[in-house]
Length: 391
Figure 1: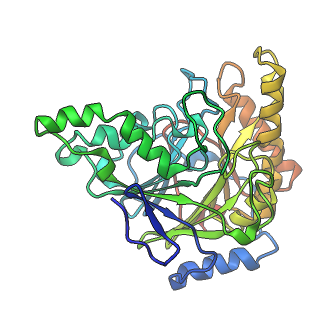
Figure 2: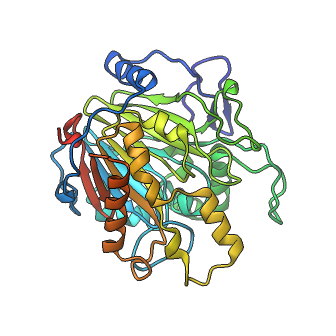
């Protein structure tokens, strides 16, 4: 289902929506104040000594109005037994918003105790396989469900628009698709299952369960496939009664566009870095947020994995060394940093104890006084405005 265009520049595409975002939109008063502070603040708020991660627990129940749930914390496409693919959920006022849909996202969503009818939005940071492989599984599996097992209303999907690049994949001519076209093609590829079900009067067309939007950066930002993450201001992606979502371009190798997302709610603010090399844009977007969920790379951990040098070079160039996380958190003035998308993700290669030591060392070097949390599959982090600063 396609939401009606909100201005003359918005045109429906194949029953879905491509919405060029606007840099300035009318915002609810409280959230406008939050984003105003993000743009204006140049000094990180004072933080106290790092707090233990006791508040982050692998549990599904939550009384908080705003909770972060890590569904999967692995990095990269190769599947691991020790971690599920990268995916997170933000639960706001009982409604759920998923950020990235890596391997096992649907199963982990259910294991976390989240209900499918509560799913309200899906946000894709970029279109690498490890972030999208379970995306279409959400509507495809829910289309045949009934009662409390399926979607209650069409889910709003926001993801990168087309890069404007030719495809190099045999059998897939034409430009590389963005999220809108990718979704249409997925519906076409999986048309057999809903067709057979609906012939027997079971289920519905999965496409009717989604309201899909391409996210494109403002033209004034100057982003392109050859200038993937210029310095820029955050721009608004969407707003509803729960939250205001803004985005900014981040550098991730050849990928364009790749985004970090910020979710501002009446209860607190959470930022997801997505996959990114160290970037001032992440600091800009995360200014004074309560929680920053940031990817983490341990370069020394790549040794001995038998990876080709070209892959190692790609990983090092497009991701953020865990040693940088303390500095990033301190510069942004965030209350809590949660490390996820761990690379290497195999606990046999880098034990959790090593990750925790690296996070402590990073915080100490940067004189970062907030909380540093090592992410784990099914971990829940309650978020309360100001409370995540522990001071």
